[in-house]
Image (cartoon, rainbow, N blue to C red):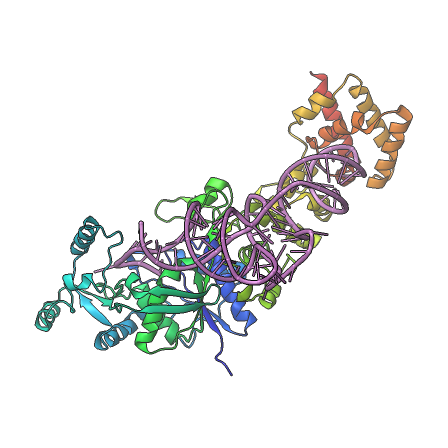
Length: 507
RNA sequence: GGCCCCUUCGUCUAUCGGUUAGGACGUUAGGUUUUCAUCCUAGAAAGAGGAGUUCGACUCUCCUAGGGGCUACCA
């Protein structure tokens, strides 16, 4: 029997988790579920200077909203904890030492200024991408170039140092990516990355390998931006003598317009959120919108995200999280970056909204009314929601029907201009008279009387209904006027028509 | 610049050598509707370019072009 599948999502708390990150988390989660495995959450906060307060909570809440629930995390715990790298700080040094001893790593004492000088020097000499590597390390201050005594002395004096990997000079490094197939990189193109920083923390490169090993991660599923450093990670596994996990590098989510990966700025620029939840930057106070606050359903968001780079190979498009868990395979993840289409996410939301029961829509709508300080005046919300449902993408769109609770404050100018004719006043007066005669003021009865009225007067719909609508709702469009009238009742309907008539008298 | 990855309708994608290249979003037209939305019907819309391999390439290989990522004591 093969090992139990264990995957991790490992964001760093440098700000709100953006939708690309959510998709990575989602694919990890789906892969775990599809393979009876574990999905774990690990916080990668090895860079203390980039720590943003609130980011961890944001990550946790965002995943929760999406239904992407880890079985182990900093908050849940687990047998492979701690799950925050800053809490694991003491564990990494031993591994760096192990590499030092086996000769796969070395001390480096170069100051940032010296590093810069080296890079400038190399550039001046025509090297486009200066590297700290097998060639340049002999010219730098490190335990490869310096004598043993010198190194010992510097260490003794407490001189700041980092520990770097010693990348072999001439070697082909092959790795098999589950999505891309074999990727081959020559070691000459990899530099001697810092593994252990002078502040006593490991870099991502060391920490992620050590943690994945210790946490028994079997599949590393992450964004394509990690592909260039994957060979380095493979080398590290070899140096430690550990079995490497499977790798899968996901294609990126690109900007809808132009090119480049979707970034924080794009959302506000293009009018859609890039974050699952709203985020307020603790430093600048700047607010970035979130899908949740915009009224998207998490199932719509997740469904849309899942289809950005993956498809089931069938024509089915609407998938619940559970269905995604069953259908998901890495084989069906595409290789190319996907431009984000905000319209399609809206469409998904509309689909899910329609699937909701009127009862649950009423609950949501009630909240929105409360937020807008609108009194429903005892109008049957179930009917309201039923009436507005087909024309809404978000529950908040149903606010269009606020005229069901409130008299219109203004009349749609375009409708008045186009439809208010000389005879309109008389027609409307007659209409009021007809409506008043209806005993049982139901939608069907109103419709019947209305049509009979048109017949006897030889009038078309267009001569009567638009004015009827604009006086009652203030708008030039909307659902059935008969249903609307029945909902607000005979008295209110007639009052509004009279008010409209009076308003037109004055002009 | 260097290294790596990628390339089918405007967008997301199906196709795993032989298809009228299919679907969805969007879009256009028509129908339904008092109107708008919904809904229904129909339409426009794609294999970056060039070489090969093959009886046959969207599919395999190479080159070119274009796009993307990486290139920190950041992840």
